[in-house]
Length: 133
Image (tube, rainbow, N blue to C red; front, side):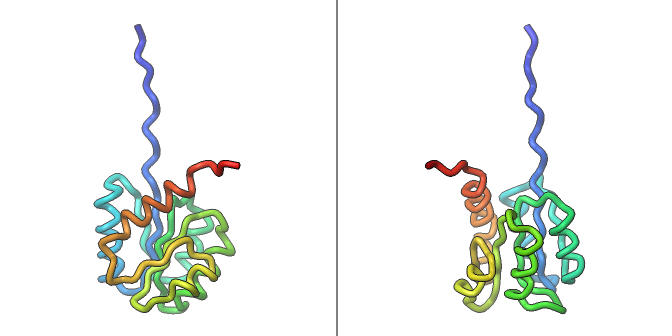
């Protein structure tokens, strides 16, 4: 009798965008708790972030801001180049309404950074479920 092996799923790839290394570090470490095998790309510049969002098959983007671009403007650019990827915008100020209008799937206040893994997991699970008609 031959055992059948299913291939291991590829680890999820995430992009974390934040110009502040300390807050970016917190987001990355918290994501790794929920997704220990994840590949996490970090960017602090708009050029790098937009390039990564264009060329990499990402499970989700977690975006704050870069030194060149504010959070809402960056979100619009990310959504324009990658309309399907789940995006969570984080900010120290409640910008939930603006973020969703600009293309974010979810918004999270930075004070709630410990929830980023759970929020991303929920978003990925919701996006991957087929829509029932």
